[in-house]
Length: 470
Image 1 (cartoon, helix red, strand yellow):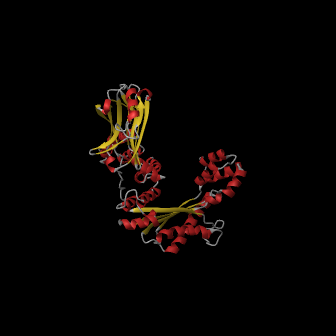
Image 2: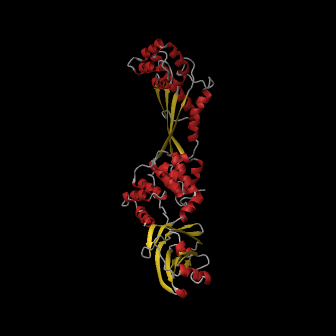
């Protein structure tokens, strides 16, 4: 379906005239159109003959034709005969004045509005051709008394051909990235020793080591920093929670360091003795009967131990629910692995990475990968589509994705990307391109004029629009 629509847009170019008086106002052409659709040219018009009058002994032949330089095609004529001339030609034949397919009318029976239609096979020379209509008046013995011609309109295969202004993103001097997550390592009550076999610890510890391995084992990546922050839940004295949060975080650091033999200070640590922020977030999203009151206590100025005692003593049922359903998740270790990815400059290598590990690439490297590919091709468009998925909120990524979408005829997708492309000159120009492709030429011209002095392609676009709308 997409290809059919594209072909129709290319070939359904036309010339139209709402109303055109010809031959001193005796004949008026209305609703004129001269179009191409595929392999055929179509002429459509309404010939207004309400004011037309022909002498009793004369005949008038209206003869449309397609002309261009030395080429021409005669279309079927319309013959209007006075009463006496009509019967003369009925007896003797009127083929000498026109063709077999002509429309023949006696003046009295001529319709006021004649709906004229003609179809001919398209030939290359017809691009830029005109429709002219001749008015020949005949008297006795087929003697031509008068002959005049008028131009009705022309066909031009003018279509808007956009020139897209892709933007090269700023190159990253150093491609620094990070991975983060949370592990819920369990410890026996009041202990700070890691036991991998305890409860679900093997799975939770594997979250951390798996994240480290995913980048550490990649030859294109260098791990630069690791940090771990431990949290304890608010129950029991604050001093004990401080000991637990600090000790358990240190235990996790030692565990990880023993596996990888990082330098001694490579893994940074921090701790939060009581995770009140996490408790508040849970309560706020809950349906606890005294949710607002508990939140007010959490936000209050009480000391941590007094705050926890107040919630426990005032709302014992909700406290027991939180102790069972919320507190275990508050005891967690957040980890972050920072790393640097080497730069890539070879387009072929980058195209391979686009398919295998696109998260390694900077936005500028995606741009490099597209160089040398045919705009609008499947691989070209796929590169910018993957780039915007990797950088969904980046204005340049969205702008280039919009241009790419338009190059393959995906105007709906382009609309979505342009919503997040910002207000740069290139983004305004792209909105003009979209408007032109949607045939909103007035809006397109407004955009192009805004950036005419900044975007070189805008001047060409305005010239194209002038031809389309002249």
